Image 1 (cartoon, helix red, strand yellow):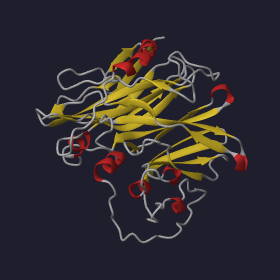
Image 2 (image 1 turned 120 degrees about the vertical axis):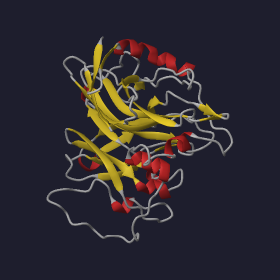
Image 3 (image 1 turned 120 degrees about the horizontal axis):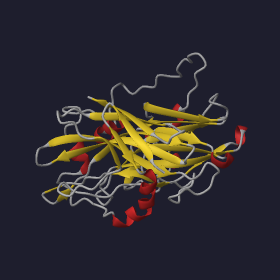
Length: 358
């Protein structure tokens, strides 16, 4: 099936999404996983973070990845906040305590989605700065979420997204939440930045998500989330003096085509050029097969609970590989492309992407 991707105000492109699905299963076997050399050289983190806030800007999740916790007060508790109208807390301050007893303050960059009585909200969770891997309720993750089974009248703080490989790679915030109900069962998808924290990890930057299934009602309602599912990875990994560093993926947003069982994610890939010492920003679009509207298996083998995504292939500065679909190429005048949002026309399957050019 042929679908269109329209980016405003950048340009329009047409993509054979079904052909893309046909290549998904083949991509993983051709991807070489870059790992870091000994400490002291340029890394994915240092290449991206060195000029963040100076010559380019990025999300709060990127700030957490680069700069860690940022104390900006005396650290004393503010007490229970007064309610505003009928608003309720999705996060529980009593959960924002590390295993060692450190109280963390701060959630940001929230995203929310609902289906019937179920609601999921995600946020950047500062508790992860102070919690070792592994911690109860996955507190070491910097992406937290809450679950409601009564239409948002109350929430249960779920802690962080599950991640059994937290010693090497962590969820780093910037959540986006989407939902659909295939075959009568409700699923939520919570995407996030997902980046390496060890020298032995895959040094590519990622956008990953958890596929979460909601069941039950009332006090017996539960939400169960998967281990990280990679949606997209760095498409560029330059080297300098033998050290490899990869493009940084930032500011993910999701949209679902429920008629065709496709999940789309937009994001910006920042790539540092070690020759020109410049940073470029490309808006890209990834697609995942999340099964059929009746709850069956999709054309690429994906299901609602186990999506199959096109992750791109690894390239270098001299031999770039195609990433996911490119929506906005780097600006010739050095402007920054960031904050892309996808939307789907369910009648035609067309995908529209709007992004900021700063």
